[in-house]
Length: 413
Image (cartoon, rainbow, N blue to C red; front, side):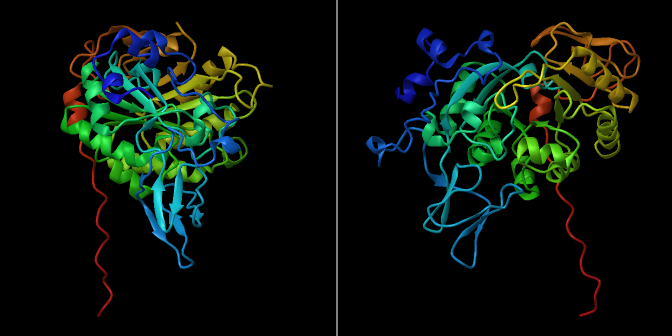
């Protein structure tokens, strides 16, 4: 591994080639990986006892000891109970002699400077750049994951560069990115690093956005949102069957996360990958959009994204554009104000329109913002307030609504 002073100094041509720190490098896979999967080598005799660069032990947050000497993880809804020397489902959190350790604190296996539109976040400082990073690991296994080479690997199987929060903040500042994005794999499983880096970033004028599946318990989510400035949730489907069979997860905890984000007051957007025959039925789409309108409100942007065959789902075709258009119309008819068609460049459904007068406000070409007419968060034609985060000052001014204290008991003493 290169010295961190070299990697995170002002970018040289070599840095750019290795890190892929150009917007043009953004593509279907997770940025530019200087990670090389070592699945075939992990656990072989010649590597016995070798500390590979993907492992960096650090005290984990949100866990408790069990009566039998094990550990119960309190980070995500799985609530893994882990015996000594074993790991949770995510593969990156380990019981080491009765102490829970994260093995991916700052072990960055992917890094790229992306347009914020790639996340996608369309109502969060359009046209700005996000310093995007990831570690190995995930607490779901989506059979259609486009970044499975890092999300479904353990930290020993992926080469990484250990980067303390301060170095990441300095790198972000050097490249004049207003935002750090925790993305590509699943930020929940590298929670401690997100927590510490987002807090430090705020102190230095940087925002932080989490690109997540939303599989997290309420307490750690509320704690993390004290430091974040935006969230995007991958809403896989609106049936438990899909979550169980295609993602090895459950729907209900994700719904709870969305309601918690609404209660906290942080800006968030939703993305649903529309997979032909699996989650694209008109009935399911209507039920989902009705739930969003009722529980989250009509102003939460919904991105309906085109599926492309990948990972373990290669037997289905890419989503027909007509299907995306039908789903988008169902969402608009349900009362949602901002519904986008994703992965279809040049489609009018990529653009932002005022929900008051229907005036085109932001025109997009792929990940590029061609024009932005929003002024001070409003439509210049009719004055309607457009929900979103339109400046760095607005992003950093966010403070979460605290959960109301439980009412005092009225029972007589």
